[in-house]
Amino acid sequence: MQQPIRRRIRPARRGVALASVTVLALAVTTSASTGRLMEDSPSAAGPVSMARGSALGPCMIGGTMGVQMSEGMPTPPGYSRSTGTVRALNLMVDFSDAPGQGSAMDRLAEFFPQTSKWFRTSSYGRLDYRPESPVPDWLRMPKSFAEYGIERGAPFDPGYRELVEDIVAAADPDVDFRSYDLVNVLVTPNAGPSALDTVLSVTFAGNHEAPVADGVPVSNASFVYSRQDDGSGSYHETGYRVLPHENGHVFGLPDLYTQEGGGAVGHWDIMSEDWGANNDLLAWHKWKLGWLDDDQIGCAAKPGSSEHVLSPLARTGGTKLAFVPLNAKTGYAIEVRTPGGNDEAVCKPGVLVYRVDADVDTGHGPVTVSDSAADSGGCTRRPNVHAELSDAPYGPGETFTDRVTGVRMTVAEVTDDGDYRVHVTRP
Ligand SMILES: [Zn+2]
Image 1: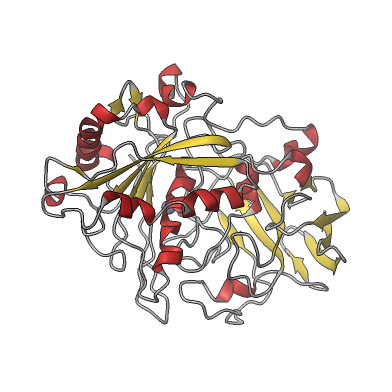
Image 2: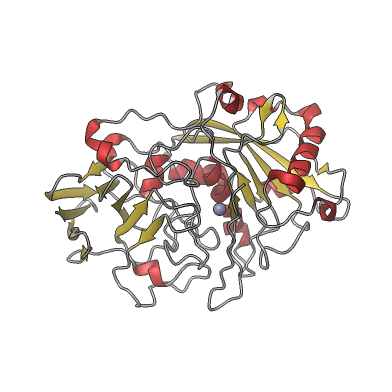
């Protein structure tokens, strides 16, 4: 069992704990028994199987065996597939000591259709997320919430295993678990602590030690507790975003926040910050999830100079990502971020530069954004948006330089079409 990752962020201006916890039981790449859930699904399975041109080979960095939820390419088997039609089973559960308030379908409506729309937008229509709720009522668990002893990041044993087994038993008469790619357990929000104090929401991804239902392990399951309501009045617009974050894990994405909070990536990826204004995923993640084609990626693997014309991430089509591999495990990624699509809070459009390290565990900083304006204080005052990195992108005439490796990237211009022309030099 891995150690749970804990996070408590306290933004300067409000005492909000922003957190989600991911616990990953070994993302094993084992036998045929691993994924009947996915093998039985209509359109193939698990990792996105990507046919890679050799030109991109050097940019497909990978981690050492055993890295938890590596950023490496491709994502190993065992996670839910992230393209095509994905069927999500939603189960709303309550307890004798936390009876569901309002209807179970109201709880569902806190997350849908927003979550499906979020994925459609972020994936350029490549992920058709179908939420289903064959049980329209609260599923009452046989034990009280207190009796399960659910705490942050507890692995499947023993409380979670018991809870999942009880959920399966309660739902089984109405649910064929083989029909779904992933499971969302939407817990009545009055169970457990406020998300302002402790975020219990958690995902078990690629876990084949999970309890079995209808012959398939419940190996990719997201649990959402409480409400991510910061009191700013925006809950009905932003509160669903915990679910795309948690589902990001069932697709194999790591947490980008660290013990120190969101300072590594800021608001540039929903795996970093999932409170506050809407935000998208990094282009690296979109490539990893199969939402970008190979011809939308530039790979600057050879010494010398190269030019890359990058189209804003929020727009469909065009080159989205250029990558500069430093070695087999690490490299620099560049992409263009502008307001639009799922990016609501971009206050300085430009070229975002970040380092990706496939050899770093989830929650330990596998991605680090380079700040074009260090210690500036940023350009946003929106609640729950990491301010310092909000003006991280590089604008025309600005240059990123890595003095250690000698990699340089200069933003030459913004074209009439709104694309960004970037010159990359590497030793
Ligand atoms: Zn997470």
